[in-house]
Amino acid sequence: MSGREPVTITPYPDGPLLVRGDVELRTSDGEPLPPHRRTVALCRCGLSAIKPFCDGTHKAAGFRTDD
Image 1 (tube, rainbow, N blue to C red):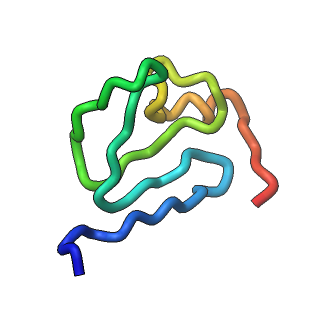
Image 2 (cartoon, one colour):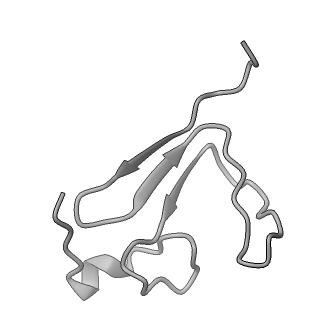
């Protein structure tokens, strides 16, 4: 066993993807994003001002998912 926490990605209904565990996020240029917390919310609506992270804009925009 590696001692690393398994990664899970959970789509939140009408909201972001919740990512939990030992994951390394990178920019579109391949640069690592510094970890801020063990659980992160990634934007799915495309409207966040802090992409790739969710800032809650999906609520005001009325973003809806099929799941």
